[in-house]
Each structure stands twice: as structure tokens, then as C-alpha cells.
Image (tube, rainbow, N blue to C red):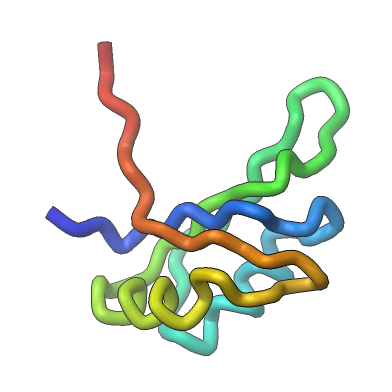
Length: 86
């Protein structure tokens, strides 16, 4: 099953969740955004996740944004893979 959640890699360390949402909201209703941060420093690790209301919007965003330049960096966009519970 396809997920509506996208993995976003290569983010500029200065981008916060709201700026990431602003970039992706033109492709549809964004329901969740998380920029992963280092626990000790609180600084971005350069990747995060964006989830859409529906699969069609997630597909549009992936196709449009994979390899795009955001804030001076080329980002990688792919469907997120959920962690398997041990």
C-alpha cells in the first residue's frame, strides 16, 4: 500500500517545519510536517517528513519536488517507509 507520507532529504539546515509546509502545500492539503532534529543540539539533521490528506497529492508532490532546489539545496523526495516493530 502506498503511503501519503513523503521522506524529504537534503533539506537546508535552516528550514523549519513551517517553511517546509509552505513549499509543499501548493500540491495539496498537508496534514503533518516534521523536520528531524539532533537531540543534543536541537539543530536540523537535514531531513524530514511531509504527509498529505490524500495519495494523489503526495504523488504530485513527489514527482514535482524530487530533485528540486529548495533554499539552495537539491532535495530528495520519496515515499516514506514505516519502521518495522521488533
